[in-house]
Length: 305
Image 1 (cartoon, one colour):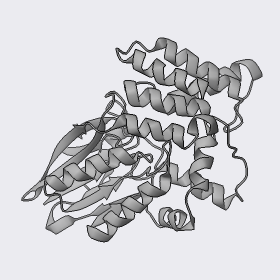
Image 2 (cartoon, one colour):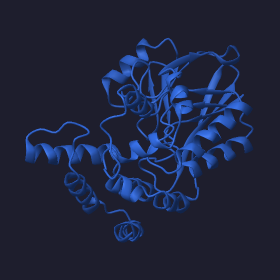
Image 3 (cartoon, one colour):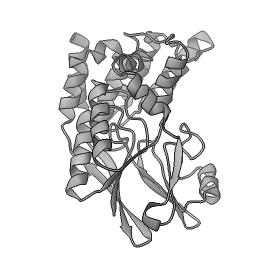
Image 4 (cartoon, one colour):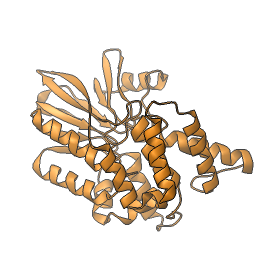
């Protein structure tokens, strides 16, 4: 049995297609998704329609990520507090406005973790962050990660959320992260996922990093107007795609830090746009990746459009 494990698509349609096409060429017979299906990229409905078609054709498991909680909580709170043309909530708002209750109900029906036993093999735990929280990260140097592995009834945990492909081993147990389909950290202009190969009762992982049409996905950001709807969030998306550095989380952390320094307090999502601009400029100045010239070309296009 060969199973494709994908996480953190974030709406990157071209990357998703590349991963699925490769998986099918390798005779994958099932797909397990670890959450964060939409997020930074354009035309979210096409990503969801693609996932629905996949679900209707192959055995699939879908875990709920922390991104899905944003839209569910927004609906439950009466759809207040987000705005277009805002770097903090603009992308979330755009996605919400371009999906339907079908997607929201689909997300609501997902679990944040699930233990399965495929074909009488050893149990596997699937989650987005950790088995108990879709916001928690399983990190190699974190003692809590070792504790989670020790307490898990499964000898294999599949997790996402960090956007970093990695394998963590402790006391005969493993945590495997397939990386991010949509925006991997540490590897520019690639998409990532993992294939699990069953060897009798043992699962062997194959980490994959693939080329895909990155520039097409960037073009779609402009076509959809995300450079205006979520200006600096969009710039960070392009920066991450092209350089593999400086995650959205780091950008948000920097913007909030600047806001607190000047105003004394800062509560998400009330972060003025000027701090997003300052955070972006600060991170870009620190970037020394060799493809920075390409990034600046796209950045100048965004400024002039």
